[in-house]
Amino acid sequence: MAQTDPYIASDDIHPIDIVEAVANHHAWEFDRLADDQIAMVVEGQWRSYSLTLAWSPREEVLRLICTFDMDPPADRLPLIYETLNLANDQVWDGGFTFWAQQRLMVWRYGLVLAGDAIASAEQVDTMIAGALMACERFYPSFQLVGWGNTAPAAALDIALGETYGRA
Image (tube, rainbow, N blue to C red; front, top):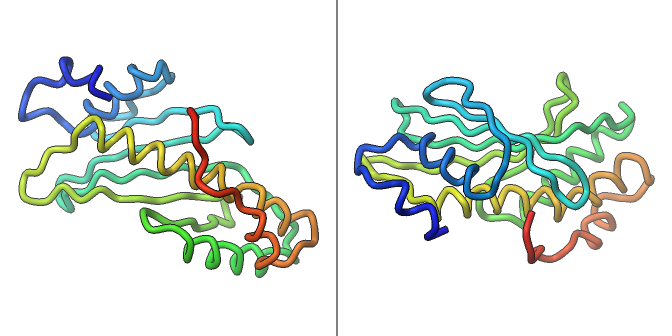
């Protein structure tokens, strides 16, 4: 990520400007929705992931939300929730939830930048990569539980270890 550092010179740079620099570095298409929010779609191995990053100056948090469509049969939802709990036990830096009304699987993470801390491009890149790796890792498990009639614990057994390479 050092390649973006020359473009980030000011100590007063906005966190979303840093996200935009990272997106440009990876040649990801993005849409700056507002001064404090940016959205992009990143192709993964299993599917496309929608990422939204938003800066909250009041909380001093850069929040990342990574979503993908998932519409499991209603009778499988309790097992999906159990799978989410088991998956969240295996991760340290964020967590999954399911937004039933929108039919979206969601990975959430917040980078706290309290006390006028400034995010580095490397931190933002790592935050986005972590979200993509978690989604890629657990996507097959969610699919097996939702449509493959696999029990949550058994589905998590096939969850890939940490993925290496590029998203």
